[in-house]
Length: 390
Image (cartoon, rainbow, N blue to C red; front, side, top):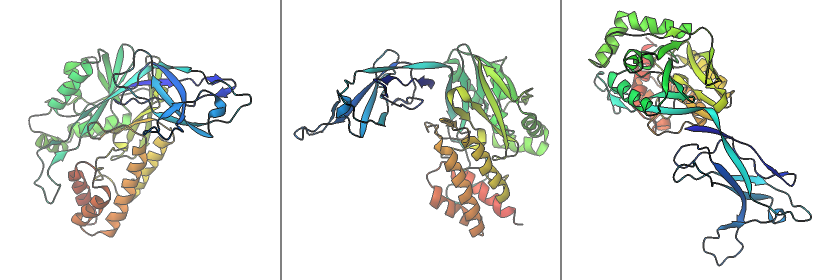
């Protein structure tokens, strides 16, 4: 996805259009191309079956609200691209002013962002205890942020096959991969570093000191090592490579600053997300989820409240792009996922307080969030919630 910015143009003293900061095309891409802004209104000719929009040639013809069509007209637009419709108020002028074609240039920013998703897959878990509890690992994302020549990834997946597919995808961009930022200490987000470095030897992993501490714990604790090896038998690197501690909470890529935001609580402690101000993007790790059941095993109601506050901190940045650590293949990276994650957390706390069994919690949550992928995660969360009660 290519991030772009639009400059508003004024005509006869009036701002002709106030387009969004980004233009989203029908194929999900953003493109550097010339854009034509033209005024349209509903045709008054009732004999025309479609009552299609016709050109407005004078500002005096424009009603209080008019449709403004934005369409690609220059080179570089993706095949089949179609811009959003924009509504913009006008007021009449005397004498009438001709509305000429107005051009805006979509100017390419220094960075691009693309998201790879490793799909939902089975793993060697315990037998299902109810409907939807079949052991499946949730889909996971790894995000490529690229400049003109160099790029970094955010999170590294876990299983060798996943990482090999990710590496092949990265090569398709023709960039030199120099680093991998790790958002939090769960092994499924950094465990693929060793395999990834076989493909890209100079791509060092880096993270905050707290995240590195958790990763080192998971890389050396015998119980956790046994857990991961049993869940992905024969699929993990023989030697674990943990990320290095980053010196500062921000770094640059292609002259643009990327900032690490340490919020504390996500689905584990010491969680972070990466903010890319130049493209209004947040890569959220497991602080934010996208249409996948959220993992609650390491939380209680107090920690879920803290998690909601972490999402408030993310929302305060007003990002246009929000990439979740767990999301279905093809799911759009929308800022609405922040509020949706907060609602899920509130619902889980409420339902858990009302129900006295894991089956009851699952039933209550599926009634509210049954469209999310991988209810197996919900079963794990529900069992953990009941176990905490003794």
